[in-house]
Length: 554
Image (cartoon, rainbow, N blue to C red):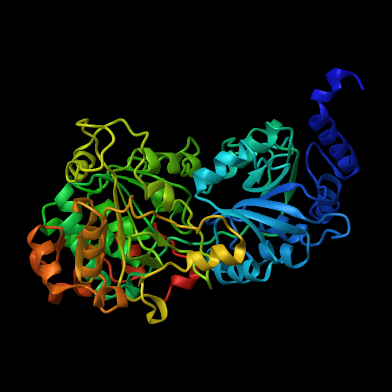
């Protein structure tokens, strides 16, 4: 073999695969839906690293179904690398032996089945990543050989319009195409002219008009009618004891009813506290419907989105001063850029978790449910590469005891990382535990380390119905553990709290109860919410918000 040819093996292999698929192409790069299984069998080989675009929300579901129909005798032992595995079809691949290994970030609705497959050996788990970590590995050691993506529209030259839900598509396509890989896109519609070109045609090898539009999950929609008084109390504590205390302007809100309650309290309780213009001005956030009242009352300057949200298309397009809008007039979302901003540019992350141990480590991966981490570890950590100051970041850093610093007298800030949880979660299971279930998962999956979502040294605050633990003010691990016990309620961890210790922590401002903060639990009722139903959100939006059918009850 000519020595020069040894540097072209990947391109030669790709050319051979495309040549095998050539008879299936019609005009340009169009392949008919009926020929999709044959196309996949032509371009995929056993053992390949394959990406099916499975995001938080939009799904290349037609391509996932077609991959399940290939001949397992020809295509097997695939290594799947994808952000999320929320569809049954994603796991059916492992049941059939078509796929063997999985590296992912978010499990979503399939969390229980993922745990079962790991436990029974149907899935060989690589790792549970954060989004940026997984995207980074696409460009290093987990580069897809073939990627199956989706878009709203495409043309016969392969150009794609991702529209309102761009999400992960650019990162997947670029990593695949520029390493001699093959990119196949399902689109809702093939058109002659696109509203805008989000992915250029020379990065795409085949475009297929799906028999039906791809599935989009309204993952970030929370019905205000489901918000409880307890969640409102936690929201009041957060606003008074953290948002106001630190003047946090830039942040990310995780998924959940607590953060939805905070959003709906901004125009009411937040206004009462005089916080408009002082907090929540810049946000990395999907277009949460529960943000509508705050946007309408002038709280928010800027929101950049990981993805879209069903029903929010018209509302977002009508607020270009707040959201990033393309020349076509629709939202431009991008998960990689939003995660980067969430990692480096925000001052605070606030979210929830399934378990917190006595040291403050938390995880959403338990023995029976592997929900994955999504972007929480990126936003819920202290980004050591940050170099720009802000008031909230500096204040949190000033409160840190300097006993263990390795930078001498050099000043440094710290990201606020907040876990807001009720002491007992779903099924009355205690959130505070002596040892995370992640240890059991690590044992059953043969992992070298337990899958932790947020490590205890990154966590700065815990909010429960008992109050707030300011972990960033603790001088050592003993003090941190005592502060965690003080807000852990009637869990085994909380019952181990010593009244004298808790009293001393309260006096030091390390633990603050609702009484300490001047928050009256009797006021924590739904009367404080700016919107009490989905219908109220539609009214706030001036009729621009068009909620999915399952959220309409009027």
